[in-house]
Amino acid sequence: MTNSKLNIKHSSFKITPVILSGGSGTRLWPLSRKQYPKQYLPLVGDNTMLQETILRLNGLDNLADPIIVCNADHRFLVAEQCQQIDIKNPTILLEPVGRNTAPAIAAAALQSLNQTDDSVLLVLSADHVIQDIEAFHAAINIASQQAQADKLATFGIVPTDANTGYGYIKSSEENIGGTYKVEEFVEKPDLKTAESYLEQGNYLWNSGMFMFKASTLIDELSTHSPDIIKSVNDAINNAKQDLDFIRLDKQAFESSPSDSIDYALMEKSDNVVVVSLDAQWNDIGAWSALHDIGTKDANGNVIKGDVIAQDTTNTYINANHHMVTTIGVDNLIVVDTPDATLIATKEKAQQVKKIVEQLEIQNSTLNIHHSKVHRPWGWYDSIEMGEHFQVKRLHVNPGAKLSLQMHHKRAEHWVVVSGTATAINGEEVLTLKEGDSTYIPIGITHALENKTNEPLEIIEVQSGTYLGEDDIVRFEDIYGRVED
Image: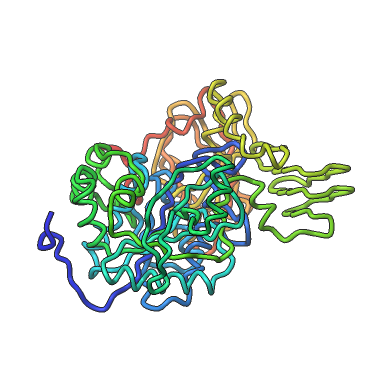
């Protein structure tokens, strides 16, 4: 691959945020691994972690629209969350399969070079918390200068304790323009080793955040991991536009080695510098981290939602579904959701993945499906399910339309709760207002549309011998979901 092929232009630089939101790794929401990874949840403030990752960049100069790399299953969730914070033109790259951070970042870099001048990429994970924004921006400005000088810059967190949950970066003693040369990347240490790192003073936590020019990254990866560049370049060249998303070619992307950017490049290159960052950073690896960084009451509790806590101390309580009450407990994590309730000591909360593994052994669907599922037209929430019936709440966005479809094994009954629906039921076209309903027998073609400027709420009662989402035959769909 040559610069001429990439058509790289050099002009006044832009900082392009690259948000890695692929959803790999341990999930924080108690059991669901697929629908709601932690980056899509409002765990710290009112915004989700993905939204906070973007919003904390406000105030930086020369900031371009972000490139977000995510799992295809989360595309509508990502798009909706961008709209909520007025991000109008994000580039959303869809990974057909997970291939770790090096291919994801390479895809973002190649896409950036296809659509803009050679920009400086600011690579961020969507599941970090950074509380000192001023310090973060100052570090970004230092790293940006290094990136413009064709360096690969990474951010090293000033350690606050001998933490064994992070990898470390050994930096040089010499400070050059606020940066240090990286001498070594080291894996997560044992406690004794971590304590020695803390004493030496030139070891930083590896944050997994980076800055470099797109062209610099591609040139370096071409040298150190050419197989990744070849596969990802093919995946970009054969990508397909799908509404507002870019689908990377599955066959090409799948052929890429599944390597982290540290392994594929940072540990091999002699062109890496580290910027020291002391900004109250946390990667929220366990529920206990939310207690650590949260605002505590007089008893050391962090409480979210409808909670009554009596004689309760040093506890994190997140009531997302029902009222939660506690009496006489200490040092716990309590998380209540529509799907499941998690109760654990803070020391053991990270072991939720063992519960997920047990669910997989039992062939449970709780570890895969969340009750609330996002669709291009809005979302649905499963309210109740039993033998041969299911009740759902449908939220149809203004101007949105469900596909013209049919079911072989279930009938549906729609009741309008709020808003005005335009419904196709066989040969009929109906206008349904609040309180109106229509029954759709098995095998009848039907569609639902919200032609108004207000949200539409529907209660859908399904009945039949099979209620799975794969019993849908689509005939027309404005979102391109009709099978060939």
